[in-house]
Length: 283
Image (cartoon, rainbow, N blue to C red; front, side, top):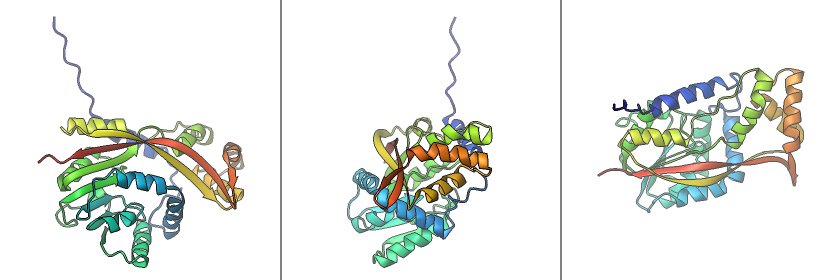
């Protein structure tokens, strides 16, 4: 007697559910990741300059760029990739919804005399490929910016607008900061922490789309740097949503042993693993 076929999981639905659960774990009044705010964008940009140099070099080295390449950077932030890419290629289109991030990017471009970056201030989900972009692009890259709910639709748009290759950089494991959330969340808020969807979901979605990508694992380091211990603790109290004296005590006791001093700054650092998922557009 033959057995019924085992149904394949719907990886897009799995991604969507994990993303919804992850967002339910966030502190609703935490404004530290509101990228419309200039001060948040400038803080991110400052940290990116000091700690992401290796990752940026590694990312650019993994892209098959030429001086004639047209690049689409999705979730460009303050220009972490777009700015160093611009002198190496023909042009860069930076899609970034945060007004603060776009402002920082444009300020850097003006200061450095870079004239081949075009900014599109929209979420990728809201971008109209015909109206907002001048595709196709030789290279489409989304680095640490895959927070869309319908990831299949987002990936399909990336594939559609590419004439060459698509490069995704996303977490293969729980990121360093997610591990801290997981350690503290139940103590602070009485409910479990749900990490976001990872690279396994991406691979599954792409496979079900008929796209069979190459995957390479890369190391990723993350640092938090502040001028002193009090600034560090204040940041993490806000980030973890600590409002009562007891919650602040829990955060302080967790964070304090992780702090080390480097010169005039205090630092917390950790490592994660990043997946580089890439494919060439079918001709």
